[in-house]
Amino acid sequence: MCFGIASLYRLPLVSYFATCSCLSNRRLFPSFFRTIPSDAFQVRAILQILRRFNWTWFGLLISDDDYGLHAARSFQSGLAQYGGGCLAYLEVLPWGKDEEVLKRIVGIMEKSTSRVVIAFAHQSNMLNLMEEVVRQKMTGLQWIASEAWTTAIVLQTPSYMPFLAGTLGIAIRRGQIPGLRDFLLRIRPDNDRRSSQDNNLPPKSVCSESCPPGTRMARKKGEPVCCFDCIRCSEGEVSNKKDSTKCTSCPEEFWSNRQRDHCVPKSMEFLSYFEPLGISLTTASLSGTLLCIIVFGIFTYHRTTPVVRANNSELSFLILLSLKLCFLCSLLFIGQPRLSTCQLRQAAFGISFVLCVSCILVKTMVVLAVFKASKPGGAGSLKWFGVMQQRGTVVFLTLIQAAICTTWLISSSPTPHKNTQYYKDKIIVECVVGSTVGFGLLLGYIGLLAILSFLLAFLARNLPDNFNEAKFITFSMLVFCAVWIAFIPAYMNSPGKYADAVEVFAILASSFGLLLALFGPKCYIIILKPEKNTKKAIMGRGTTRS
Picture 1 (cartoon, rainbow, N blue to C red):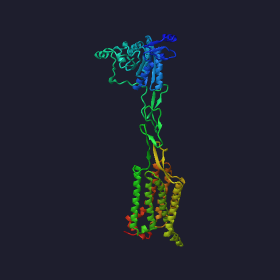
Picture 2: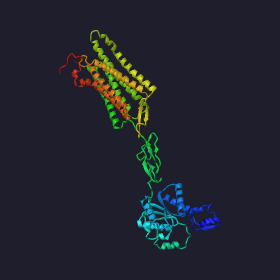
Picture 3: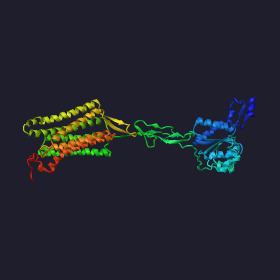
Picture 4: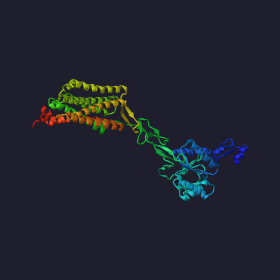
């Protein structure tokens, strides 16, 4: 009131004790001056202390007057401006010894998770409060005192030391008193307020622990912003700093690491030479190739024997060559897909198999023609199946497949593609066929020749001959067709490298089927039953006796 009267009459008034920031209003108090800083400075200092010790969760106690109310308003304003903390509670201290109010306030302090208490109050307020604190034996708090009670002698007693030891306070700077320092160093007064905490480590006072990298903050509903949960970033998202408010999605070809704190390149998945599946298929492919070479060697060594010469040995050697190419072309499906391998793999596969199946088809047609020629009036049928005609037919049928492959490669060539959609955490490197029509024509043409060979061989299976090759052609084509009919649904439902593995398996299975069905019986006779490797035995005119 005296400040208002003085301002009304423009009476100069100088104070050495009034710190209320409200008195800094020059419009209301134009003639008021002071020799002490306003509370705005100690509020700013307390905010700096809180930031220095990373205290973000604290309680605020104030006196019920302009000093406390304006300090609280200034503190909350600074807190909102600079951030970095939240009030766990704000309570107004009574002037008298109102035990119910004091018990309620101390109860709130005890239940709160905040370990830091800031008090803008007078020493009388604090005396009443400390009596209740001592009564309830509430220790473990870090007090921050305003200048009004930080140096109060009445609070610097042994009975309060277990509760107030280590208090940080704002004090008014005083002048130098000669001899005081030496005096204080010689004595150890009872009101020594050294911290009783070990190692002088400040307590931790936070509503929620900081969220580490790899997580994001999620505010708890109905609680201050300092109270939050740490939610781990979802797969494919990261946060690389503490207390992130959101997680960031990784680029398309990257994925979050296990800690979710940075993005790493996605692993590339393809049928590799170094994984068990790739090693197994490679071994099978090379084994098939070696087996073809061995059979080729056996047939070359015994090329003059009746078993080898029967039904055109040239076609048999050509079938062995094409089967070797079939085994080798499967290796193009293993390893990281590149433009060259994507284009070459299907073309090599298609042409190799057509060469093989067309030779089998011509071989079957020759069997039928030979037996037809053996009947009365059928001699003229062989003129259409001479050596040149057989070669020409094989070349013609193979060129059709070559034309299909060339058109396909020119119009819509297979290309390598990084598939990031099938799996979230890895990239499937695959060959996109480009044109499904081209791929369908390639498989369809092979299937057409195989079915035609099967039908002709089936018709010739019962022709009279001790070594009727049509039976083995029928069986081999049955195996071949079964493998590739099963291949289509398996290929369509297999992702990434497993689609390549299915196609390689189909190539190897059908190649082994043809090799064993067509050449297994002949090799058996050549090596183990040489007595049957005679023209007389093959023509069915008798058998040699051992």
